[in-house]
Length: 140
Image (cartoon, rainbow, N blue to C red; front, side):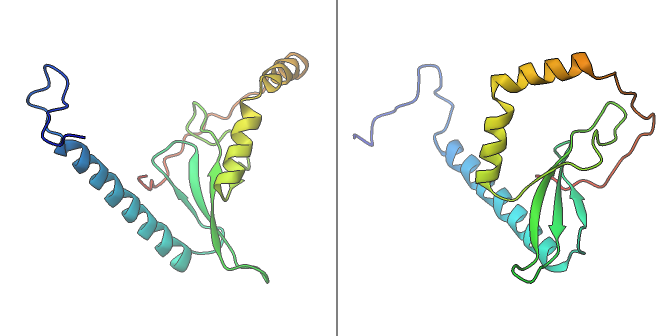
């Protein structure tokens, strides 16, 4: 590879290649700050304490220690309805990438769409409550 050759597309003369490095650096810093925040939460948080994130319907829960494991964290998915409240009493807790991949595969299965359509046809429509909520938010 010839490092002296300008590889920028035509019309991109003012675009600096260093911008990509700066964006990567900023992303690394954000991930490190998030990791530090989560580490502090697992060490100092209360059992079952919930931290809301900047993604609607996604929060972090501190799970208590058991006989076999130290305190840990889980991501809780519980979509927010039009009224600003969670749609379900309990969401889906995910603790690692393998669980997330398994749920994504299940949710993306076309047969689930058919099953939901059949359920909606059989079950009566549910009313939602009119209350609205505004929790603290952890930026991610």
